[in-house]
Image (cartoon, rainbow, N blue to C red; front, side):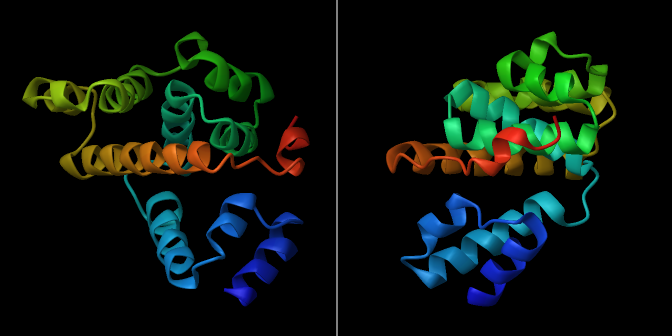
Length: 169
């Protein structure tokens, strides 16, 4: 993991505090990194921007300061639009979204607010918006991951690296 931290520092200019927070347990850190990389960077029917948008929508619902700051920066960077990134952080419903993006984010928010209400009609609405069953799995997996991560970040008072604040503005 030391090599991974060095690579983060080389690529990003810093080691994200979320990684430092896991460093007390190298096995948990390795699991977190592997799962994050699989969800957010591996091949998916969802674009990297769409996955970051889900992270932001979920984190906004959970009011997770760390994730809103870090993933808001990623949305600004991937979209090339700082205003869009800020709208996503504050209220994704105010952003210019395609209908499929809106359906995707509403589903992620439903999973966050009331997962017990998700039913076949909700999945069918995503299919009707053009998402495959694999894409629906990825939407759900990213939303679930960030619900977990938001709760951990809040529980330990994880603070975002100051470098995120000025990125892609």
